[in-house]
Each structure stands twice: as structure tokens, then as C-alpha cells.
Length: 268
Image 1 (tube, rainbow, N blue to C red):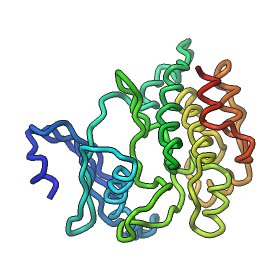
Image 2 (image 1 turned 180 degrees about the vertical axis):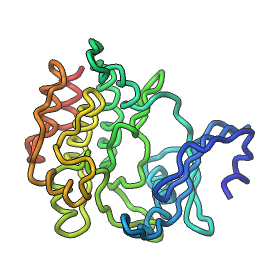
Image 3 (image 1 turned 90 degrees about the horizontal axis):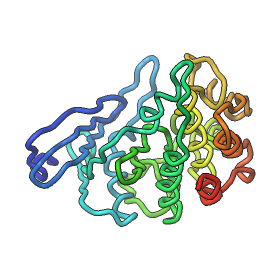
Image 4 (image 1 turned 30 degrees about the vertical axis):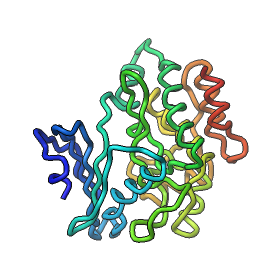
């Protein structure tokens, strides 16, 4: 399987939850993230999610369509896998942790926000929407910011055997139109406009610790989505021009949000 391809000299389990395992792997070939998917069995609190087994191969197919190299993907007995280059650096939420400390005078730096915008703009320029924009998916490296976890992206052909419907993402970052569609039909279609909303929500929670929409922390997911769909949004209290920009990105109607290029211009 994947170990035969990489022949690791060292490996570290980074994540094992919700149908996905991720390792950081060093090998003579290079430094990689290795993802292995498996189906989630139904529990009293969580419905079965067989699609998680397909997600690594679907991401591999997206990487192929986007023209990336130095990656591979395939199948194992319980699902699929991929490996891709490992990106060094903190994610957006961790990097801006000092901004969220009580009484902190540290302001979120516009250059960091711009790096996230540029990473998303690259994807949009290729005709794709990410579908799962969240702070953990922006890795702020020493030279550039990388946007990772493309398993839910839409914009080009994916082999049918690895494809599955988009059923929403983390509700904290879900645009109202996505939440409404998931509530009504169980599915939705990722769009660049929804990515803009999710980026605004990501910047807000990373800078302030506050979600864009108010609902109880332990609310069931449909209740969370109802709050998002109905526009029960908190006032944006991020400092300065960043706050004004985030407020526009979180507009309830997709057509009222700035484009990714307008966001970049405002930050640049």
C-alpha cells in the first residue's frame, strides 16, 4: 500500500477521527502527509458516513485535476488513501492565538489574512470551489500559505467510483445558502461565494474566538444550520479595516459578498 511507495524512515500519527487517519511521514523520497479513509459506523449520536472512506482518493483525483505533482492515491481493504507533500507551519487559528488572549494588544496581521486569500484565489482561478474552508486548512508557512484538504472541492471531473455528494461542512463556516440547501435536500453545491463566507468566518473566529453565528455550543447540527440559514449573525468586532471586510464577506446574500479578488485588493 502507501508504505510500500514511501518506505518511511519515521512516521507520526497526527489525527484519527471521523473516518480519517493522517500521518506525518519522513522518507528518503521526501516529507509527506499520508491520509487513510475508512467508513464511519452509525452511533446514537452520529449517522453512518460511508463517504469518509472515499475522501482520500477523491482528494487525490482533485489534486490530479489541479495539476499538482508528487502525490499518489489508491485503495485499501476498508477505503482509500493518498499521500501528498507535508507543509510546515501553524494553521491560521493557532497562529492568531495571541490575538484572542484576554486583554491582548496583539492585532491580527493583514499580511497573514492576505496569504490565506491568495491561497484561496489560486483555487478559484482554476475554476474550483473548496467547499470546506476553515482555519485549520490554512497552513501559514515561511514562504507562503497553503490551502489543504481538498476532498470536498468541486469544479471538474472526479472518477465516479470516488465521488460522493456534498452534504455541507463544519457549520461554523457554512454559508446561509449552503445551510438552507442541506436542510431542505440533504445536499448542496459548493461555490466561490460560499468559500468567501467561510473565509470571513475563519478570519473572525481566528482573530476573536467568536463564531459568526450565535447558537448553543451543544446544539444539534440541524439547529445550528437553522441559525445560519436564518441569518442570526453576531456583530463583527474584529479590529479596524479587517472587521469591515469580514462583515462584508459574511453578507447573508451571496451576491452581496466581495469576490476573492476584491478581498485581496482590500487587504493589499
